[in-house]
Image (cartoon, rainbow, N blue to C red; front, side):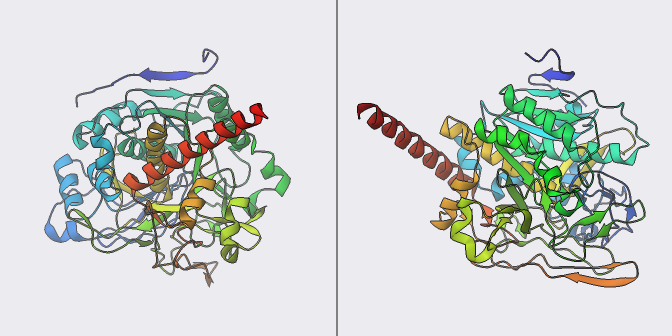
Length: 500
């Protein structure tokens, strides 16, 4: 029963007519202005031009940001759907259909394998007051079906009223829109459960007790098979290791109940935020990673750059890195955990990770040079289509692929990492190696130049892209087949035990 939980809406087939603070972004066509946000999606407004001149459409933004929720606003806002779609057609962004093609999901959809019967839980602070309308309009323009059900719950307490003058609240609403629309775009047949929490997630423990309570409610009440999180805090910002470990209850619960948990690996490359400040975040000047992505019970999703052309890719994906000296680090988060030792399933990559949990595990589109196109109409922001990116984009995209795999396996896959690493070690074609780029970053802080040496992509597993990116058609079948094989083996073992 959910009667004790605030519920904003429980909608089927809805149709309508119609966090952290960030650093400046540098665009090729607009001067950047900084707004606040909270979580792992850094948000930056780059103007509201809707010009569709060829030169403007072919321009691509460079961005350097600090993720809040973890997203990067890459480029401009389009009031016109036609202008937005034209911009994507020229390679400035990716529509839902183009993402379907990039990750080879079309053969699955043709067989009805689109996440049907599976629920993706998207977790965000505050949520968005217009997400029901925005998702329905997004679907109409993108020509994809509405989700069978969109449900919004607040199991950790009622969220405060939406305040368009509060940049953190606006930032989380933007993050929510990105998360929901990307997850739905990749699994159009799945139900979406938006889990809103009432406290900002910032650095350290802030917001995480409410997130843990909300996610534990989702798991204990069997409300979702996949949980997508586009936020995190640098491990070193927690008071101590014990304070971080005390917040793992929902992930332990999820592992016990076969719920897959995903988290963004962050947008600051080999480092991350030490102190969040309105005038500009302070970064660690050495290597750092974020939690919960660093948790062995969570699958960490990093970011790639997709050089897209009509019908596919111009070349293989590379590690996302758009760092620009003087503005801040902006690259796929990755590295070695200080709090978690190497899990058993990373034994085969011990030459890379040593004695620590290494991340990310996989990587998907995240660069502001190839952002996802989303629709948003939240108060305080101009209604229209926005190109958004970051590992906040990559994570819900992968959540959609996992939901489809759950459908094909006819069961929730649960903790995904053992299967992913077994597939990686066997060079399964569903995992596509990323062999170029890296996540080293450079930035100016307090008048001094700093650089943090990260990791470069290499054949096989690495600490910038994990096992690489995804061929959805193949990976879904591989994950499902592996799950069914393991299930059959366990059943035979139980029978043999009973006979003995």
